[in-house]
Amino acid sequence: MTFTAGLYKEITLNYNEPFETLPSVSTESAPHIVGFEASEGFVTSTTYKTAEVRYTGEEGKQWATVYGTPSTTGKISGEQSMHMKIYDLSGVWSDSYTYTNFTLSSVKEVRFDATNESYNDIKLSYKTAGQDWTDLQTFTLAGATVKNCKYTFDAPVKNAQFKFTIVNDSPTNGKRVVIDNVVFASEDLAED
Image 1 (spheres, helix red, strand yellow):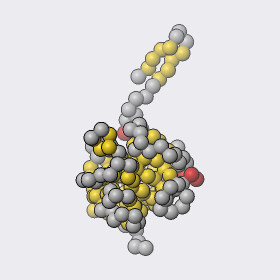
Image 2 (cartoon, helix red, strand yellow):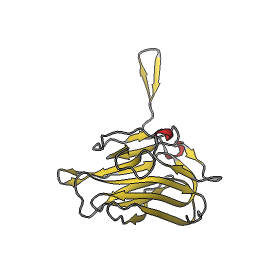
Image 3 (cartoon, one colour):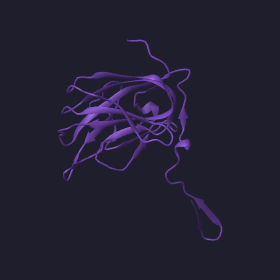
Image 4 (tube, helix red, strand yellow):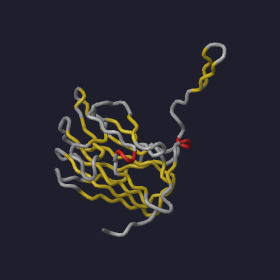
């Protein structure tokens, strides 16, 4: 969409950038690993309760988050982790999630560490160009215990985004799920 401001200045605004113009990160030669650290461009905040999408991370590798933020509180490893909290919004529960605001070239396996408060669980989804989010698996988390989560596709998915969403049938206001050490790989990884 182009607007003309005055006689001499033309301004172009891009709303709802098409999927095809999202940055792409290659996983062909090495897994893409995210620790949500400051060195990776993730800026911490103490503000979780916002429905506004916030972007953080290195240019071209940013994550979009709603009702969450990278934080140093309750981190899983390193100096910070990604936190999402669920809120009671006048009888309706918040849709709390974070997703890659870039595509990954080829993903066969996704691994991540997760923990929670109040028995919230975490759902992994993905989408490709022109598609809606497809739910892959909901990982049941057990309180403050860190769980190593893994999802393996039968065949690698190409040029996909990935999303992590809080799930709870009986949520508690302001309670969180924390994820860290996210790995996107184009092949099955060896067991630790």
